[in-house]
View 1: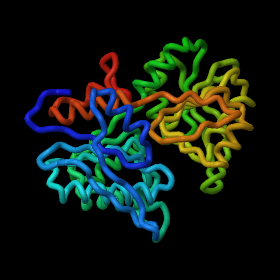
View 2 (view 1 turned 180 degrees about the horizontal axis):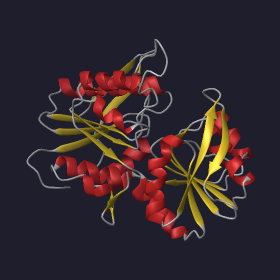
View 3 (view 1 turned 60 degrees about the vertical axis):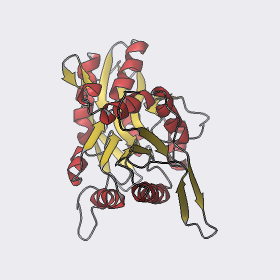
Length: 321
């Protein structure tokens, strides 16, 4: 760890203990000791079991399902640390829930991503470290510093090792075109896009493909999937248009029961994702899970030592964003 007059400690909620342990190990530390339990009525109880006065503290907690429970747990942990006189509290959110509710797209609906940002600050966060936000403008919802990382350096390393030939990177919707373009630039691949029409929160219809994909190996890139509706609908259309092999690359694969069933029936040959959310083993689907622990650990070291975090997502003079 970088020598400093101020100690650093990493604590973890219950949402993704394996990732938190891996982050701590990547920088030669042990997780801080804390007790997180529940009262009989379901209320969360937290006790920090070691001294944090005047220390630089990081809390690792993905807001994966059950989202509200994990958010509340994080708020309570931050309040406990603040009242224990921690010098600085950084909320490490490998996956930021509610990110899809980032605007008023119909009358009388909330902007919940902004509400969550406000609650994090009110609970005691002095800084936020997160990865692959669904909408980058969410960084502007905070009046505290936000370090936004990308899983793409980890993805790039794995994809390069596969030596994929005749490759086309595909965005499954218009919103993901910037990400798809970054992947295509780095991999030296072609670029295509699938136009889609959303029928409901769980059902998507892919309409047409813009770009040449016949006889190609196709890489679909997206930031997150839960019901896998967008991915599987895009894959079906791409196969019908002549794609030879279909690989999906998704930063956050939350995957509920519906999403798992769709993937089992889909024509996706491999799903590449990360360990930002804890997920049980899934039979019948080829899932490759890459760890972002080293990336997050290095970011924690740099934040603690007031060093630049930007270089973590730079490559060949460009950016992975």
